[in-house]
Image (cartoon, rainbow, N blue to C red; front, side):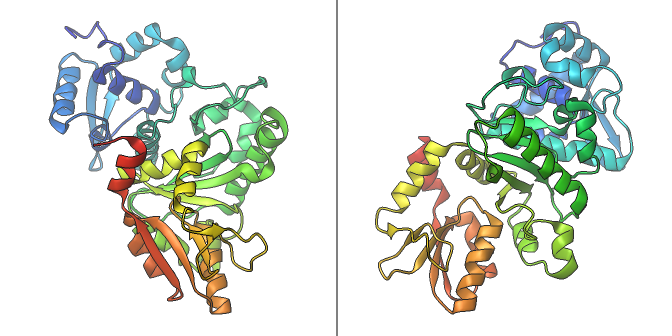
Length: 374
């Protein structure tokens, strides 16, 4: 990388950083640090990219982000128009970035979500994914997990106007499920109930009845909320009254609504949500000393323990399902067990009634066993 007229080599970390900024518009350096490699190495890469006039830092309202220079946009568009033209041409928000803090904060939340997906081995770049949301329907199938930014969904044209006002940052498609994805960051945020129901309706109609009807049934549509800490999961699950509707998660709109943190632990949850074979293997291991589930039980369950009491696998943090399990045990004064990861344990112990026994899976041991990490 000798000057501003040359892009870094493809597949290099420097090139990946430029690609991320191109798609996202503005990326906080705190999110670039989440990419693989040492923090110092990434700092040096940013220094080199600035030196070669490919990126610059934008600081306003105490919010710092990294953006592409005009020269970098030209080089990336020339190199791979299929990947970047949607984001680097015209008046799109990622090409002509507004300075209002609300708009920039949304760009930063989208950046955080995008990097969480990338780190979870989910396909994120548009030339690597089936073009599900093109204006003209194309017969296709989702063979691998793919994340579509809300900007990509808007390619639908007039149909996409139905989701105006939605807080969704994008849609995650896996072989068996379609997730409307939200990112709260570091604080609870309110949803517009009608806007989010329109998102669900669009997903159900477009994906389950039209373009991917052979792959998805209506119950494949789920919700996924990302956040900075498990504390926010507790906040969502303990809302009551009108606030419960405003925050959307436990009001029954989505029967399945998962929660994951924007860090390595949450990325493990996402990998399980996206890989049915891996999830089945984990469930098989957990079920080894348990009895088969009871479909006709009063209690939602994945298995029964030696005493015939219900066991729920809660490691993917399906919040409505956990809530139903806890409510049923409370109502019938019965005991049961939740199995979760150790980083989820304290939150679930706080949330659940005393009848619920919480048993943790040690994340580090889990990763060594299933991801071959040492």
